[in-house]
Image (cartoon, rainbow, N blue to C red; front, side, top):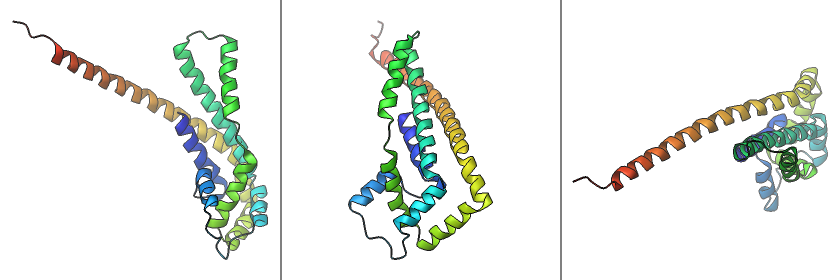
Length: 190
């Protein structure tokens, strides 16, 4: 579940500007970073686009949604082990996810700047700024946080259903293996 949430989160980071790389790939690229294309947008232009598109806000919403989904999944799993947890136990469980899900937003935004510079030319960025300054672009930006949140919730529900199906199939196959093993080890009657 955690891996699925992280993958969904990585995809969501690129939605506002349709980037094609995850933050992890950007970090790897930055370390052995090839030179920027000659027609790359400047950091200032990318920053303008990031501010205009409210990318920081979108990332914050995506991070918070991911954290909430992780908390819900963790609580469900915890309740399977401890059917009647105390409020103190649940608070401690949530605290774990509050600590580990605290992502460095500024660092992530800086990584995104480099990604955009490698994928979009100065002209591309100027056109995106023009679009996102338009009424339709502004509507897209207003609606995006809610769209992201609803998408993540829908994705989590699909994942949860698939996990239940997968767990059922795994249990059935394990039982089949155990039954087969028992039959092979049974002592033949004389």
